[in-house]
Length: 160
Image (cartoon, rainbow, N blue to C red; front, side):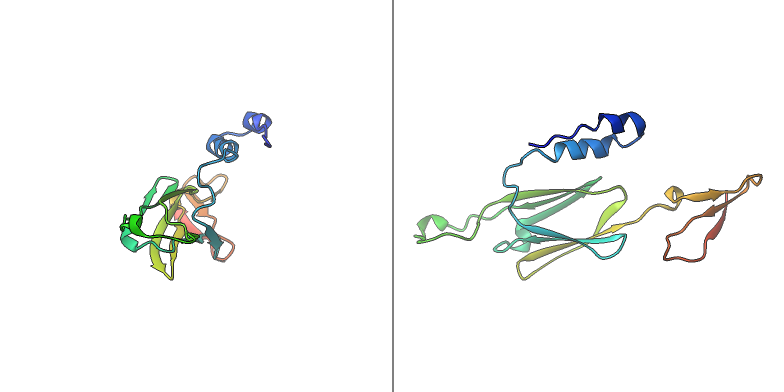
């Protein structure tokens, strides 16, 4: 098992404790780590989609919970009386699951949809205006300029 020592980085950084804890704890093996399979797509710097393969589950058997920096997807399969069936081969997973995703700050769920056995969860990162970088002018305490993304050409003038 590879274990990284983040002590030198912890000494020279402030406020990254949560990130280092996530990296250190990510190496722990969890039960049913590969079930259900999922994809994470990035459409832009602030738009993402998580696709979870939930074949055999109905929408009412899926529970999606978004809380601060955590997205939890739980599948609870209703018992349908499978006890009387005689399977020659059972290759389709028919078990409950819980899948957790760590979300960055200011990332929230905008939409969830299910079709063709795939659960699509759309995510958006919206950084509050107060947390965006600002240009501070020397000698003029009443004026600051908000620095926008590279895709937005014109900086906004904002007075404090």
